[in-house]
Length: 369
Image (tube, rainbow, N blue to C red; front, side, top):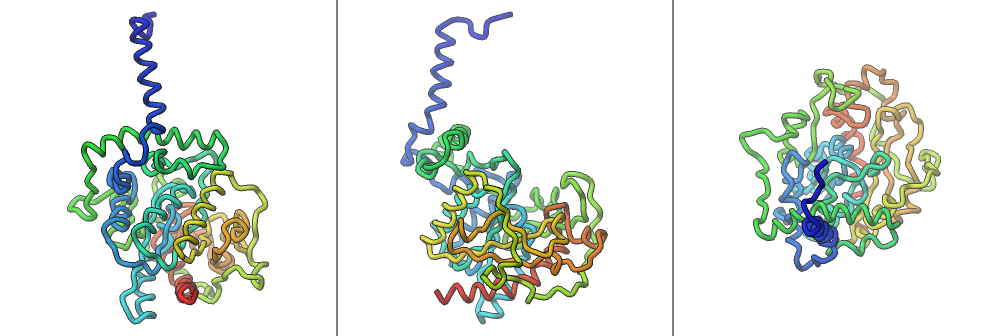
């Protein structure tokens, strides 16, 4: 077998190159990093709805009344134009309601994108969802928005292994960061003659023309990548009413069920960072419960932890699944879910109309503090 290197000097040169790559994130300080905007401009529609997110953070400058922010659950669940229309009617002026959502859960992504948004725009009410990824999963775009030179201090308090994972992400992202200094990325256009990924593969329409939300026109499929049932418009006939929406207070404590299983340390860490950011910016936060298919018969709102204990001043809002779905059969439920975890357009319409009055009430209450 031929040796991996032709000589000792060539092996040494390779080792030095590898060492240089490993220490590069620690050597390149924040003053040598490209503008933060480049973290989004480098990501096209195939990576997620980042051209829309970049536009909302760095190009649209007006204040936001309500922003729905988080991963795919909230992306699919809220009809943003409907909420904006209802809030506009209530306020007697054009309201500004936006969704900034992406694929892949994690409180790290939620923190970084919320931080970038709040650095550029004022937000009155921020509505998010429990960002719980599958065990062992980290967000695949972490190399884009975590930059060690400017963000290392955020890792204080995490175990060495967790810090190492974020440092590794910074290593992966460093070549693109340095390239952006030489040749800045241009953001992808929001609307073109050629449909983007979300229009063709997901059948959800262009988020940029829907105030950031995704309106999935698919029937149910167990696997999101599998063949799905053809979409057919459907509005469930249930006894559910907007008054069924509950905010967590002492009087509704029995309607919420909190798990005692500990959260992953890194998840809790960035959840606290997110909550602290919102407090510093004076933003009212609402954690919105979005039921997955397996929870539809639950008489209580299940939560992974007692979020007010972890996050402080956060409002928990939801509708108990048994009230939300009533006696809908399995076949009827399949008409409002695209897969076991996400609403399709039917479910989005149904859920949004029921939850919007409570969201508007919380928006009005946020203005009184």
